[in-house]
Length: 219
DNA sequence: CCGCCGATCTTT
DNA sequence: AAGATCGGCGGG
Image 1 (spheres, rainbow, N blue to C red):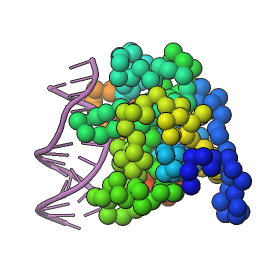
Image 2 (cartoon, rainbow, N blue to C red):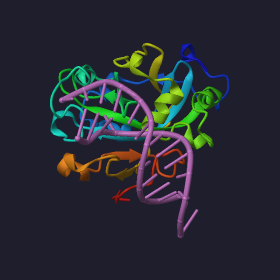
Image 3 (cartoon, helix red, strand yellow):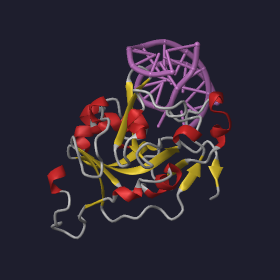
Image 4 (spheres, rainbow, N blue to C red):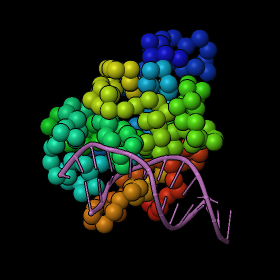
């Protein structure tokens, strides 16, 4: 499937049509947005994955967020309009991607932590030759960027309108009623109380979720 | 499956 | 100086 086919009528009932998402979905608190983007599809130049794990980062009120110390050249996209892609470079070799939330001027984002491969699996394999199993193709924030070919060049792209080959769409699958909820991955002491915020959300039982829960909330 | 370690370079 | 990570290696 290609991006140009977004919204076209499916030929079979199994292939449901893809609908754009409303920007209003993102124009609010990332903690509310995060569980609602589960099961949406991320398209990048025709390669497609279903979002199965995310984390919320609440900007200037969240010590774990890149925006905690205010706006900088690196995190500027997080302060921009909602529904755009914030891509950052880390550890000297990896890219990670987020959906920008909140109204323009207020920082907030949902980190994409894992996808279930849907379309273009051969392309994903060629981009990630180290992956032994398909479940390793998109299980991790940097891995999914590699598999979908997402790098700094897509920072700021509009995921709602679809720009620079990337778009978020829905195939009608609702988010899980009871998402898996845990604390976030990769927090250090520097984050203080934010270490314990239950802001990681995942589709229960999905094999592509990046790691087991460090700590389970609710269930 | 789990834990440890090194890679690699931008950002503050 | 540390980082919203990953892959390889060794052990259970």
